[in-house]
Length: 316
Image (cartoon, rainbow, N blue to C red; front, side, top):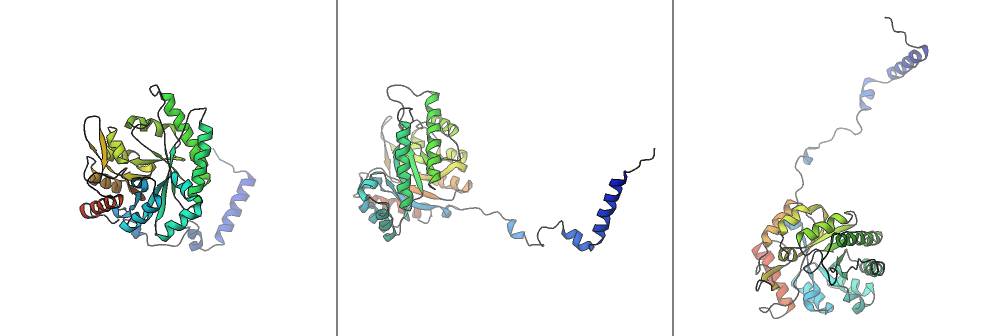
């Protein structure tokens, strides 16, 4: 059977061929090359961040609210960043006062501990507004991250809806802080809905990963029955920053936080895992109170720095 091409299609094809013949062959080939030839061999080896990519800060909680002394001591010991608590807002009054003092001591404002987020329907709106105001103070003071905690329901066991409601409220708060340029980090904590690993899983699943990141506390995770290494592997893509701390068990039901290397947390394995997942960011060393073998918060901070540098070979 003879196929006849319609006259309109035949004329169109001849016109396209005539137009193409007007260009040199090299020009036609160049149409398929968006860029000139380049040496891409340096991309053959992927960039793998090492533990030295981690920046170390220190939490002011050990100083019990005396933030001015905490700033001076933490800088003197040699840490590059600091985490403050929300009490600093009333203590300093204005963000500029915090920013200027930290600048004088060459400290980065890594995070602000904003307190507990209330997620029940009667309190969530007011609580979100309060923490959003904290995020604004943090931003204006030159800070990076807002840390948030929660409390379990009072007088009853937690149910699945509690985790879902917390996840929803965290997401709403995270959207507000994102508008201010401040990422939100949820802090897993003993005595909260995230005390056990499965509780943290439910909260992370119920919250939007775009707006709610994880501020992993390795000692609280361990005390709650989890393996911090596995948590890092699981949530590597949601890690905002970390609390590096250690914990020892005094008895079956009693525990206390201690300097790094004195407790049960496998701190070397934590840093190995951070390197494997390619974490780049801040690790804040935290010690809730001065242990019995130290004379001051500054001395305890120096002992933690010595452990990181002498035992693990890290640069603080």
